Length: 362
Image: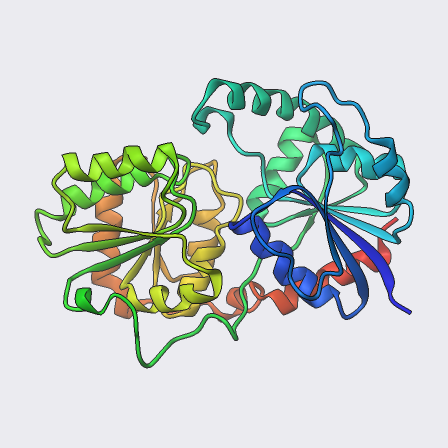
């Protein structure tokens, strides 16, 4: 008989955390009956998860008041796996059920678009530190996050890298998307949240500089583009006279990204803060090198240099990004993938490490 697992995440929506949740639970389902709890969802539950429940662990974000009915329901499980949610972490601790927390890194308040969300995020930083110290079993998704947890909350964690699925992301012989742009050079692809945190504003400025040398350069941006932030970026594209060089694709289903990674010559990201960067390894698995910001607030340098398949830029300005893209264009055929590191960035490998932790956790 399978044991019961409760998986908790604040928002079950398209993005990196949902990819981590889906790829790990798909493999855990062989050993556990899994229920998913979230405050809100924008996706249908995967077929291997038994139930999806919407619940508020704290009725009020600013005044933590435990949902004791929910706490009692958690006592029916053998193990709880939380993805960085202080409300769910609080309830899990009070349930006294074995709990593992995957730390993705806290969303930086200064990049949030409105004052209300900034204030909530600032308060969350205080609570996170308290609850991280209460949790016995914490997984860090990168060495960067592991070091951050030690500096921020003085807690030790287990390093289990995020990964990719080789059956989903690999080189294709034939590319069936964006055919009308196939002759453009170079072809850049971005996939992720269309936000300031992801550096879309900086990428647009770098494309403007690159256009002087490569008039036919093309950048395809895949991700939700109907937010107020995205509208600002679209206006920036128009004001920079880049309508023929930058296209917004909107949200692309995760399983369809393989076509766009293969289409691109270079994957580009300029995240100001990043706990891991799943699209980086997905693109590299498709044979597309990556360019990203390698500053102190990001794991991107760790991932790209670990893979030895791309370039990082260290000064956060358009010229530095432009130069990194040019280096990538000129060095693309010289990259030799570090297979030892690459093989660790695999969901089968990561899930086995999680299962080992579940068995030995207190």
